[in-house]
Image 1: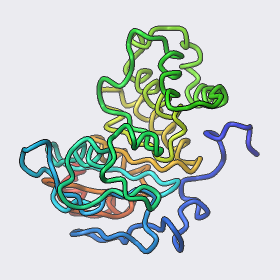
Image 2: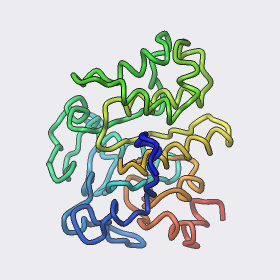
Image 3: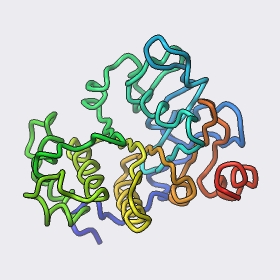
Image 4: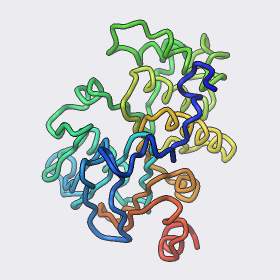
Length: 276
C-alpha cells in the first residue's frame, strides 16, 4: 500500500512491469565481452558506440556503449583511468562524441548541450562541486527546480521523505554538512527537476562504508519509482550487488557487459576487477 510518496512506492527495480523484456526499453543483449548492441525498441537512455574525447585531445572512449532502462540501476565500473566518468560525461554532452550517438527515449540528443539535456529530463550529479555550500539545504533544493514553472512543493516533500536528515537540517548551510549528507543534497537537488533519468558520478566517493550502504539504499528506492539510474562507481563490488546491469570498461572500451549478479559471479571479472 502506497503512503503517497512515489520514492517509497513498493515497486522493485526487478519488476517486469518496469523492465519489460519484450517491448520498448527491453534490456541490452548480454555479452561477456566485445561490442554491445541495442535491443529492438532500444533502452530508455543509450550512449551508443561512442568514440570521443575532450576538445582537440585524443579519443578516450572507443566504440563504447552504455545504456539504462526504466526502473533499472546500471553501473559503470573498471580500473582507474578506464574512462568511466568520461563515458558518463559523454552521455550528458560534456565532451565531443566524434562518432556514435546518444538517444533518450528514442530521441537523438547527440547535438544537444548539457543544459538542453536537463530540460529533456536528464538529471546529472557530478562527483565534486555538486552543491552550493553557502546556501541552505532548502535553497539548494529550490535551485534544483529552476527549470520548472509549476508548484514543486510536493517534490520537495518527497525528497524530504527520501532523505529525512535533509528536512531536519533544511535551514542549515549545506557546506556545514557531512560528506554523506552533502551527497544527499546533491541527489535531492537533481530529483527536484523531476528527471526522467538520474546520472550519478561516484556518489559514494569519500564516504564511510555505513554511509555508502545508506546512499545505495536510497538509490534503490529512487529506481523503484521507475526512474532509470546510471551510475559510475569505484566501489565495484558493492555497486554490482545492487545493479540490474553492469558495464566493465577498460581503456575506454566495453570489456564485459552483463547483469550485476552475473558479473559478480564471473571468475575473470572477479579476478581482474573485484579483488578475487
